[in-house]
Length: 146
Image (cartoon, rainbow, N blue to C red; front, side, top):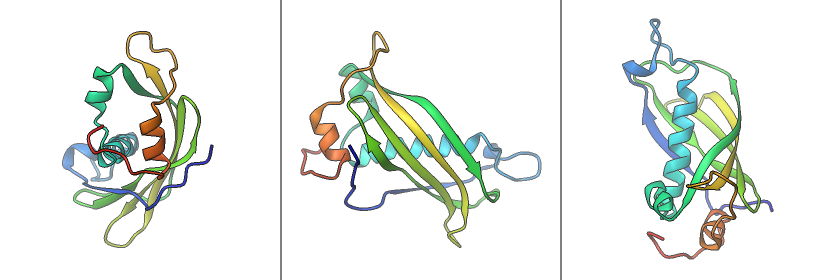
């Protein structure tokens, strides 16, 4: 099932000293952290907190990831990190994400992630709840906090 979201999502974050190497450039693996945060904030913005989902027996785990680096982010840059659902299956989501520098919209990094929905106890695949599928597909409305 292709997911069609109603509006683009973007999470703002700042590059801190801890994110950089000795040259003041973002260390490559930190882009994955920025993208993870954007996926989490995307869910939060739809009314789904990962801690609550976990208490209800549902976890999202990264099954696979791919990143392509285009230009460096530097200390103090403000970043815009997207988290768009490309494809939704019964127990997984495929995200396409981009990290852009806010001041000039330069594409710095892009990634594709397959995120699996699993049971918290067994880590075996489980179907996503329908309310979550509806929210992610942009077909709302849905109750906030669900």
